[in-house]
Length: 289
Image (cartoon, rainbow, N blue to C red; front, side, top):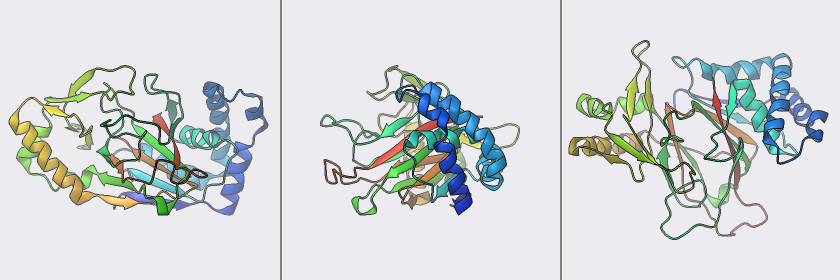
């Protein structure tokens, strides 16, 4: 992925993060009150500008949408007593952490949960979760997505998949691109989303100001109003597969990505209590400018 960046934290940056996550203000907050946790994280993020300027600059590069790397992987993060503090601080350095009430709280744990036979692929089960952009089934999907790898054992599978829209576009014909820009695609919400419903939008859009491509996509249950729309989606799927990159989000790493220019997914992993002492666990948040 040409636009992606890996950033390995220095020892001093690790120490600064540890101090931030152990700030005494956090200790006075009820564990279930994520709104208060976020308020303290915002204050700690402001301090980080002075303590970790190089890291802050790398994170905030994502805000320049035209020349953004699109995807940033932070490596060698320190362990935190409450990992939610860490991802909320990083998210607050990037922008404004948002909550989608129908999806859950600010920090969503990504863990295998008991599911029904035939249930759609999602963050709640261990099957292959195909390429998608998050919340494609709401009117305004989040701009940024962050995932913190709290526990992720390489031997259990669960590789993260990424695909860059800038690479995908170059593999599509002009006719397919034109078809994917038509507002003819129906995105139904999955069962876990409390709001339910279906939204109708293009898959691809291009800014008139700077020519930046944006997308929304989720393959399962996606529908199109025309046969040519369906055929364009088939070509898009081929382009996505040809553009795919696999990344192992090792324990204590965190990925920040532009949710409207990078697709992400996950290979299957050994669930069902395969590793009960250390089950796969990621935390996820959404961030706006």
